[in-house]
Length: 316
Image 1: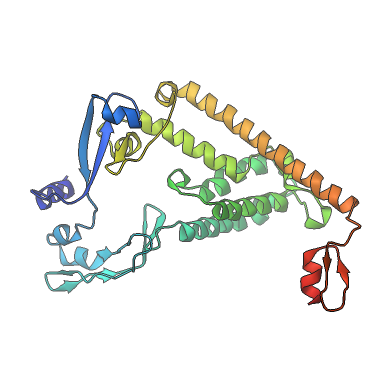
Image 2: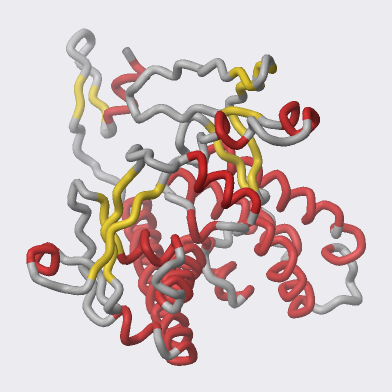
């Protein structure tokens, strides 16, 4: 309460911040809805870079613990600020940890992905002798422990991540490596990832991410209108961010139905992904069984023919 009071007093009469328009009638914004007369509210969200105001009151030890991180816009130079509070120069950092998640000036989750993999790998190694290499423990029990400890650590706070393909591939590679280890499947066995997922009865990281984020959307929809996550989900920036949904609000109000739909959708997505992977695998095997016989590339110097372009490049 004291922190909120200090923020209110510091921003009294201040117009700086990001204006967010959000609906309070249980509907997401669409372009036509913005032009219509509807029940909506406008709020202003400010950065907690108000350390100049907040840090002015408090003990000297609290000021020494205060750190400043400046995250510029994409493409803008990173000019570190110099913040002085009552003669004390606050430390400027490139990253800091908040609630177990790492924030950096690069505005991406590369450091967070590496941190999650490191923590999950440490948890996996600690249980190697007691769980994974114990022959008296069934595979079903090992999978339950893996889901409860390793997967939970790996996917911590993934609902708020902006995941790119390289991040998902990196996490899924670690996921597959762990399953191969305690299932005792070596790379020499030539077992594809689809077969490993079938034996473990688990889903890939791609599907687990989508499932977690959609499930978190349901929690956000059920929050009160004055909560910040709800305002950000139901709102849009003044520049005009469009969100198109059909029956999201109606489905999320019934929690058991929403969770059932998420599970059904996750299974369908995983089935589709496995089918696509098997199709690519069959195409690779078909190309290996029937290699092309005609030469598509020739050396301009000696006239030697090559089937693949990589052969011509290595020859040159």
